[in-house]
Image (tube, rainbow, N blue to C red; front, side, top):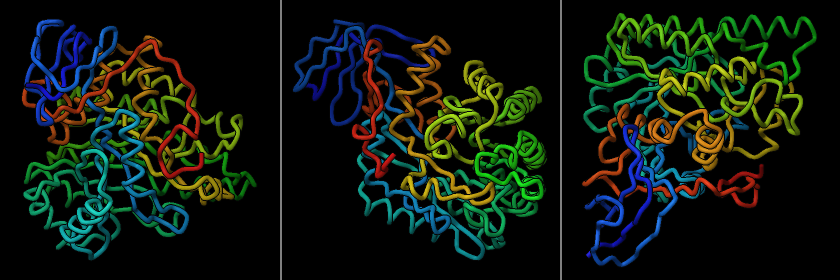
Length: 421
């Protein structure tokens, strides 16, 4: 006897979209057959005719509970994971935060304890962030972290000193050390690519010109920032043989550099956010509460927005994540200048629906590509596949049913994050 039988829906993977029945027992997929072929008694049956049956979303980039600055204290995983579930995301990957002389393994253990106390409503995994003047001892712990199940390590090429997001910057030497360890022990590095020196110059230049208003943040952090930092990161990754995952690509140059590196057979993966698919720098001024649309990197031009969509379409960009970092609107809008603008946004619940609506429904991507960027690719890149990211015998029964004819308007009162916007 089955616990659940889903009948007659279009079951989707990155390769196929077939009318099939899916049988579930004890939280796992146990049967898949041609639509209408499974005649097994089930405790619950769902008629999915005319609907897509897709793997539960995997959001590979979220931040819960982390405190980066006085105004940037993210919501906990309790409301965040509830929002994830309502939005069709059944697995999130959060970050443990290491800095300076802190033990990497100890910080991972603390984050695991914190998440267990939050009792998330969906499954989760962990990356680790290695920041600041990380010690030799902390970087040497990468091997132990990987053996314990955390194999992805994020670093920042920006946010030095007293930035709006806190002191996250790591120098090239330490980055090289992390990459060497990751390559040696079959890990992967993740990098936030914005050049800190170019940003510093532009910020001071904008102050000198009297143009330091928050809506000029894209002038402080132009395309060149991402391009310059990514060039350096790709070089270090190539020389160290470390796979690298470039988080939240925001520029056309970033998309082109990933394509070029892949052409040289480099192991590089690209992520963007539905924030960059949905908005561009004109929204800072033309939309109400314009700076609420801001995240780091800053929004770029309409041409960059188009290039991000093209990267998603072509496969140059592998994943669409949220980079959810939910803080109250008052804090989100508290920045008074280009160097005090908080980042983060309330996005984990809207990622799956927005990407379907603006991608599949509008014909930019097909449903198979949708499944790849929202579930299968992040599962494969971060070692969760085939338990996650696919509907197949033996996989977790993390299943989302999408009605392609449904229409709704996103309203605050319908969302489940601890957010007031």
